[in-house]
Length: 185
Image 1 (cartoon, rainbow, N blue to C red):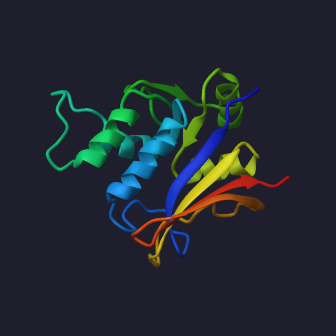
Image 2 (cartoon, rainbow, N blue to C red):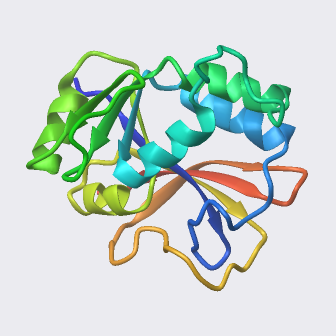
């Protein structure tokens, strides 16, 4: 039995996935994302997402979280920081932060990661998920849709043709809505 590969991302009403678009995180949304991380024991990112997440959520060498983090952000970081990470990149020579680098045939490498023992793999980013979705490797999709029109930025699963079945829906006080889907065969 393979581990489930779960893709989760914030997205605006017009399909933009830029981390700068959407509503600012609040305690409710950070608790949701922390619980999402807890569903898996491995994170899978492309280079850009790995570098973005490492810059924001890796425990500093001092061991102290930055002053800008509130309690909900610290809780998120404390779950993410020790997790195993797999990074798909053809440009990086090495990674750290509990990470391993995969390159070459990324689709086959991800299939091999799915075969390892574990609770699941949390997938983030934009380009890598679109490629993996096109190969039918994603088992679950979670979109937190923000009531914002961004008008620009990378688009959710651009050029991917999917049929999805809604399996869960949750509304946040902010007006954002989390929607969880499974692919329909």
